Image: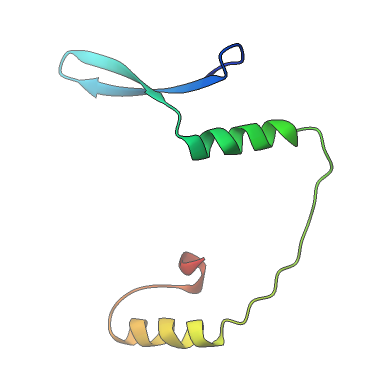
Length: 80
């Protein structure tokens, strides 16, 4: 990924193989990706934060169990 700080423009390159050899295509970075990149730049040298989250997954576990009985795969981890 190339980041040009002067124009505030981000691009990434994708390499793929074709019959003629290896080809490179350049794409503009999506807005959501830019926001995450800028966010990580801001907090790069800051303190680490930790959190403990608690969820009530009783109904979710029952739904996943019913889906597994029907033959449709799924797990609690894949749901999150």
